[in-house]
Image 1 (tube, one colour):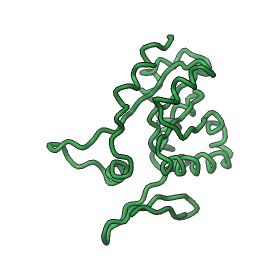
Image 2 (cartoon, rainbow, N blue to C red):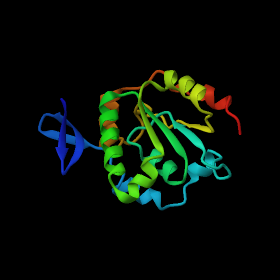
Image 3 (cartoon, rainbow, N blue to C red):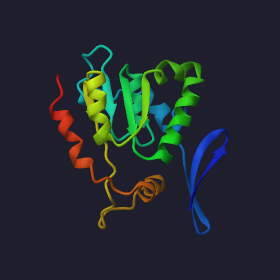
Length: 178
């Protein structure tokens, strides 16, 4: 069973299974995302953005938005695409809270959130504005000979399942301009 609740003014998705529950929220101002904002990031260099002025990145598999926040904080305009309406609500809450924060507003204004399947959205986005990079960090199903994923990732996997489109995300990347 999944349900939404506001815990300490943060929209949280709670999954209850028997007596146990796991909660999930998109937190951009504190925790992991806040820590990563101040760190030198390989993602920026890996996407070839260091020499570009105001690059436009599409985060095709946004998840909880941690990479999106890092990219926006490093100066990129980011179009973040999430296919799940549940996760999109969590992201919208994080984005709204970031816009209301004096420091967060600086980079949150560079983020555009879309609730759509990335395989559809990528073509539409590219027609509206040039895309410098497409970032794909897909969630793969668990493998039997590997340690269990963290609780929040397992909750994601239960909620979303595996996307059959991940293998198609690379096509627009190979057609990009550098």
